[in-house]
Image (cartoon, rainbow, N blue to C red):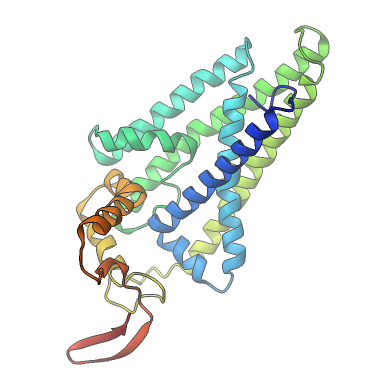
Length: 290
């Protein structure tokens, strides 16, 4: 709503708060991608990690901005295309919920919970661990189709709103034309930035990912990662479905860590051990410094 009306002095605090919440949401989704995607983790450790991180942040920031502007298009008031955006948003939410239910082959409360953040950002976009990649690609294709149609309706809503106000058909603030056209330009540029960065990330990921490497193998883990992270991730992917893994990666790990802090009275927590380098190996196995 802030994009459509003339700002007052008291709105500056609200605008700053909204901007900080937006940045927090973008950083949260990028962190979630690092937990769910092997290709993203490899990109962050590669030789071109700075460019990869910028592309990753641009991809998620532009995606979330598109979703915000689509919700703004639904606030245009009594307008046919605005009503279509509202109906399209409801359909998009239902498509995401149905996609999660089809991936888990059941209607679960975890899928219902994940459908809320899924409406703001496609959480399955970079999921590539183990046998769950096929389910994630199916969810992504369904969301791409519904959100592409919703994006087109939002563009029409902004353009028609500006046309009606400019022609005098609808009486409104004279600056509403400029704000509607500004939202339209921001929506187009955000969608182009999202598609471009997503394509470049896919190119980077295909170049970095080694298809011969098995996830969860006992190879030497990268420095700075948990010593037990890959094995746990492999068991998680093999034993549970996409919804369970998304829920565990997004909320379960943090909840387990919190419970561990309260219940573990010892001085050493295995989940906190990070790999430094390999000391040696022999017939009895490998020795790591942690």
